[in-house]
Image (tube, rainbow, N blue to C red):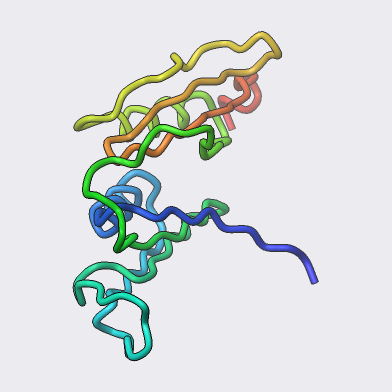
Length: 146
């Protein structure tokens, strides 16, 4: 059986807003399940029934799952050593996604430019604190016209 891996993000009460934003950026199918949909008997905590227990976004090969962390403080995620690497089909598509992620409070951490190893690379942190890395190959004349 092949291995399937999803990225899972525990947001501090902002899962609904973050995942809705990611659907606007990447497209795809979004599923949101608040705690109120589930029997919470025996849970070691009492979450707000409207907070998100589990959500998924599937957009092509991009697959993200997330939920609200009932024990965390509201606000963006703390900066850490993890980023989500996205490899769009073109430099133009990467630039479009970067523009969408940096709109309304996101910021460029490393400008998207030609990398020493060839191709293009850059990093942005969105308004929810998630660090996104972008890696794209320059289009050749044949690919650009296809």
